[in-house]
Length: 457
Image 1 (cartoon, helix red, strand yellow):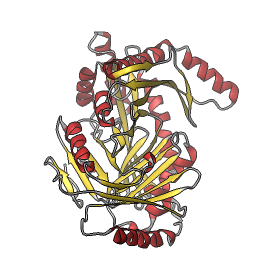
Image 2 (cartoon, helix red, strand yellow; image 1 turned 90 degrees about the horizontal axis):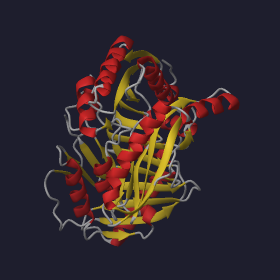
Image 3 (spheres, rainbow, N blue to C red; image 1 turned 120 degrees about the vertical axis):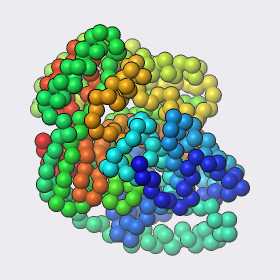
């Protein structure tokens, strides 16, 4: 796999602890973060990031790299955690608000298996401390953060540099873009191949090899012109405001993007929040049909079993580290624009102030993303899926200078290179899964991105 070149890129080696981070934040006039990332004057800055959290009511846009850290292999979680911690050691941070602290944004590949051409530029783990980060609350309050390791810059020089960048930001104009015409839509697996795969896996499950495995379908789309990812994000954000919206663009013309409902972990100090999301039905065409589908889901033994497996595995992962653990006895419904899920919110009070990255490693992949038991399910995924997952269904998010952060499971997502995009959608397979029903579920999960891309199956 190719690895992009970035300023201050660190891979596998220790960070020089005498290299000190200077981070300064100031309030600025409100701007559109998506217009910022779409601006031609900033298009040459790599990498670019966008993150919107509908629950914390805040968005972040990152431009450029003060430092990028990559890692490979089985110890990639620990390597990233240690190097981020070393970066923030002895840092000079001019901001007290926890929502405005400097933070690394990035993620991990789903597994450490070799990837393919579509994922070039996305290592097994990659996190960037943006040179420029713009933070914006939903009420419009906006701040600019400059991160630098240039020890020769005085405080006055930093403020002058920020003022010059603010002038650049205030000059940004909205760009009218459109989704280019789709030329081809290619399923990477035929219906017959999918049916055979699901039938083979359910037979393994019935013989006791595992309880559940999550298998993904992929579509590859070609467009008549380069894909305007920021325009796609604006459509996703408009139609799915309750989802975490994200993009990471390591190089110009390459992007991973999506709108996911799936929180992996959120940690602030000794408080931790996560959720189980498994089992789904379509939304109804009217309120009565919607209630019928919801009731069907709430009373489905198959979906409840699939959901319970996820809840129990999260419980086992958190119990050794929790002074208190709150898990409701039964799931509720989480209704999105085109789909509804069984949902259980989980809250923990931790015994120690571990990094959020410790819990990312402990939880990934949950049975909702991989299956159960984990090792057996991951082996089936590796042997069954013919297309590399890359960062699909992987932990993606941010970690700040306190070791706090938010990570999601990057589903309802796609990777793009210039005028090509690959879309992913998964289904949880258990003993009584039906191949046609599971294929229909993946079609439902493709819909948000297909709609944003102005096409259909």
